[in-house]
Image (cartoon, rainbow, N blue to C red; front, side, top):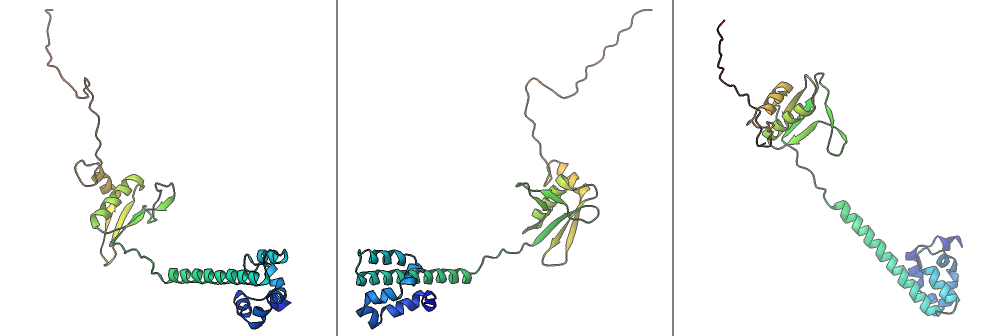
Length: 208
């Protein structure tokens, strides 16, 4: 009995094509009743129930069970094949950036800030072009760095690097017309003027 319960679907199929199974299908199915009722392969228990109820002949029941077992094996083989293909498929690797910019505080610690998803992240990023790294560093220094903060930009393929100070970043950002400058456009307002107007003075003296 224990050997039958440990039976695999492949072993059952190999036994189902023997002369004993072909000539005595009812006896063969009865011999493996416990395994079939266990529903090791989904659907075999239901077929056996139909056999007991007289809805299927032993020959038809055996044919149905063999078909279920074959489909189960094919399904498992396809799953294994897909898993193997997925494992063999090369993963896309990101091309390393040429420049890495990192913002530090005065003590040399990497500054952290909340990103657009409100997740606290270290202010470090990679870029392909030096001007992109420069602009990002100036902007992050202006927005997040404390007094004494600085941004170091390192060229990933050499030992060259440069430092952007917080003071330079603020100056660049607030200078109109310069790259990275903060440009604020104010709406025009009719009838209002914020300029200072002066009128000529006309002093007059009265006789004493």
